[in-house]
Image 1 (cartoon, rainbow, N blue to C red):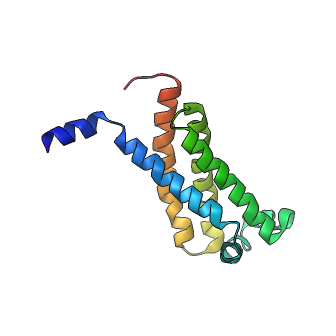
Image 2 (cartoon, helix red, strand yellow; image 1 turned 120 degrees about the vertical axis):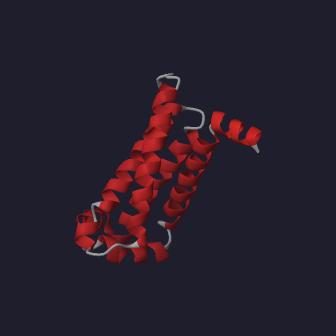
Length: 142
């Protein structure tokens, strides 16, 4: 057990697991945005908020597709980030911005919803990944 702990402490397994977790979240939610069930699920969350600008610009389906494109770019950048830290940095920043944007809806929604609350965790995950990718990009050793 001690050997396992020492190997784990010296590894990047935690970052790999975290990155894969965020990739899966963005891959799933990004893919869902192309289907009617998600378009309709988003409507009551987006319509009463400032994010309704997406509906004004693109329509209800187009707004969902726009979010799907952003989330697809995010998971692709995070995936490429395994090999190219600069792409990872882009993905990390989008994760953080996505979390901030979604959490900014809370005052207008007037309720805490699982759609929104997951973004608290995404803020933390994006921050940890950003620090890791910046260190790799700048070639900074711990």
